[in-house]
Image 1 (cartoon, rainbow, N blue to C red):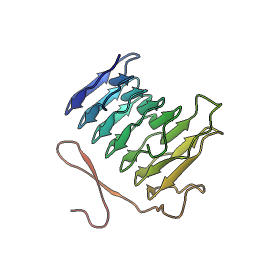
Image 2: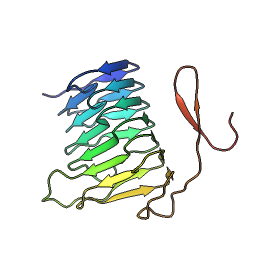
Image 3: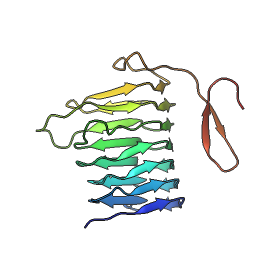
Length: 191
């Protein structure tokens, strides 16, 4: 089934059982938009895309027991400006995504980090990447299977893994939470 949806400025809370908060599969024609949502407490994934090319922008995902964002199949999703906290895995990429489809400008805080899995072992693929993200207070910032390649660029990592390039740094971000619960990153003096 082809689908297009705008899921914007919603609050999802305490999702129980094997049920993702937002789950899109097989959308074609034009990408769906998942923007400005708050997902707090999910026993499964926060956002799950299967063969769908949605724009995932400006969401806040907290306390997802499995993955905050799960991307699977040949598609071109865009994942940027999201805050992900206290999850088992912040972003999982499973299967084949074309080059250039990399999470950018996201904040991963107190979670299982970024995971790259390759479900179909036969096909070679381009290196995946994480660009301009904050990955902080995360025991394992990045995990890949033996056949996956992952590049981290221009990112603030609490622990800089040896396989990252020289564009990464480790500078304590000053996290601020405002009354509406939004988390912001500041460098230098607090505003």
